[in-house]
Image 1 (cartoon, one colour):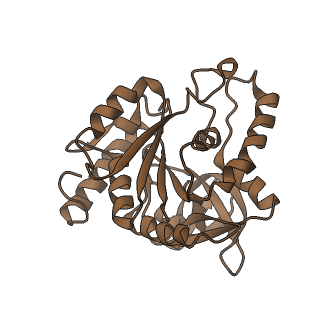
Image 2 (cartoon, one colour):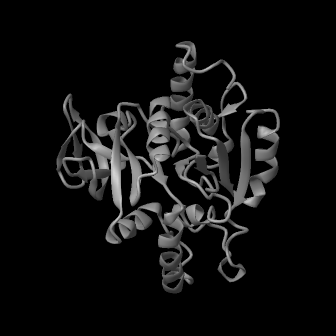
Length: 287
């Protein structure tokens, strides 16, 4: 059974100030190259990048001589939006996922282009997707302590789970920072969380069932928000509806360290982390 890696790469990078999904990180590599490299090593069979038309030429040029044995294709979020709904800002990660419905027919992992997830997370998800458990979707459970920033507070989706690591709910906390060697504090609420608490970092494993769940949900969203230029339809909205319909969302614990690029100030740290991993031999000098 084939499994697919899908990458969300259509964002405008407004907070970063540029198209961060094509920002050079090390040698000629961009950050999503490391995810593709890890996914192919973990046994994923193909890669689909969800992009917007204006970066197509740059993306095709980048991948022309890279990963020659891999099947890499493109889906265009702006081309799969009805004409009457066109706007410069994409409609969000949930809409991007639904753009895969005609090209992905097997279990798939969907991730952000501007995040680094670690090779172990891909191996873990590949194994889970190949099981193809009926009525089960997946999310990597990163430890809160492995996702915090040294540059200030961050927003994270705190996961509550049962004793089988099945998701009960995700609650967004917007001003988290490390408080002591064992806990983080949300400065907005004063709540403390153990650094071992699971957080969702947009590393989701689905079957094509998610399309049937999401399409009517998105149609309702559009009816309610078609005149709203900032409204976005997010993957967690799909996950909530899936839970409501009886699907299980299983959290897959990982000890991998996550880091990503939201702001331009994050770039030096990301470059340093990748250089360190390269020096340790985890990645070749040119991915």
